[in-house]
Length: 284
Image (cartoon, rainbow, N blue to C red; front, side, top):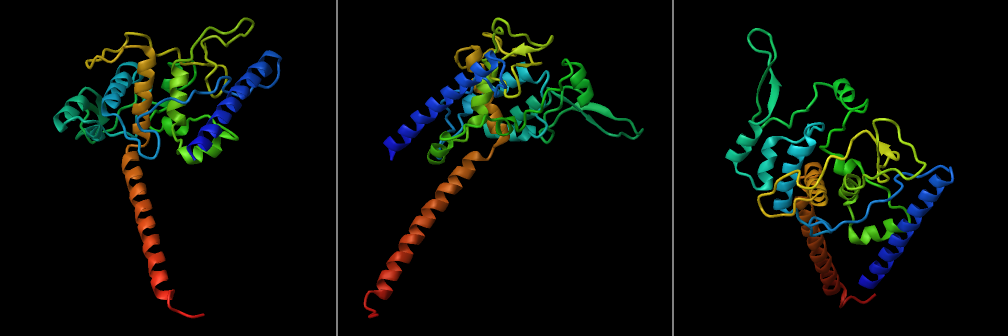
């Protein structure tokens, strides 16, 4: 079985590489390209597979990257501060972290809205008052909310890759895409023009350029645990954090799924044994 899965994986990788080459050739010869021009590379994640779990240290680093590099433009409107206790923070730490943000509340006794420090039951506030203001501040493109981005953005792997995905339980397409996008900024190839205010990135799922400039650079975010402070590490950490934000109960789901399979296996064995005992001495 393992050799069969490995063979399928090798075939899928070769197919994906060929697809990427064809997309680049189509763009070069004026054909209709298929985006992204360069497909994401499958990364090594602690939460991959049926028994994968989140790395709490990585999630805390990813939260730090989000706060210092992403929260300027992107919101997490579906993530309450109280859920950060799942990352290993104490209740007091969550309260202190939430208080660093301000949220709108009200109306007060005078009918006026007012700003106050956030509390654990609040969600991460948006950096802009509305979508129009967000678009105006970002070259006409409103930055998307990142709460579900790791599940909403993924590149289709196509045939025959999806076949062995069934066996490997591959569900990390979103984080793989986020890493590829965040580390894929480069100068456009010779003869390729991009719109003013956009930035070339062949990993972008909707074109060859996007309004968001490269948000990460080496040494941008400080880590206290000695983890390398590189753009590649930042991309992996924030992608893992966004995967948790999109699916915080993933570990419980996998644990329950395993228990259900064990139960079904034991139940099936008991039914088989009962059938044997009941029908062994019956003449038909």
